[in-house]
Length: 223
Image (cartoon, rainbow, N blue to C red):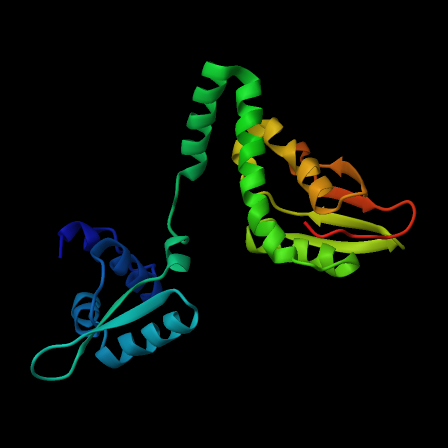
């Protein structure tokens, strides 16, 4: 194992954190490899790995040999990868800045609209044929799964409010507020016939608030 992996391990890290770090920097490892590297008993390593697997941060695979028992290699899951620093916001900002320099604000708007419509394909599948409050709830569940911490309530018959407490693209949206523009368009397509009102958005320093209301008979068409 490269020395650099161990040089950045500190005593302040928990054994769980050290295991995750080693799997990140070294790749798949066995219980024996982790035990020898960390100076923890194999039983202790197994206990931590079991806990990490239950938390869906670690997974394992078997490697069979011609003779003897199979060897188990442990590696990080996609969920665990999200624990480590990423620079997606920086990359996205650079890409949008290039688009703006080359094609102006209209170019950024065009990209945003295409991106939101591509995302809508997944939204439409999630909402299916649901109607009324169930349709709104399905949308909020979808937003939650994609990093938009949200809730909703029916303020009066036929009127629903969706509250957005987090924007996973906030750093990018603060630089390019027009990225929030397609949201009302998406809501209009998901809830045809409804009046869509954007009361506030996260880039304004407050929680997002979207209102969906039907003035007459409450009817939800499927997408």
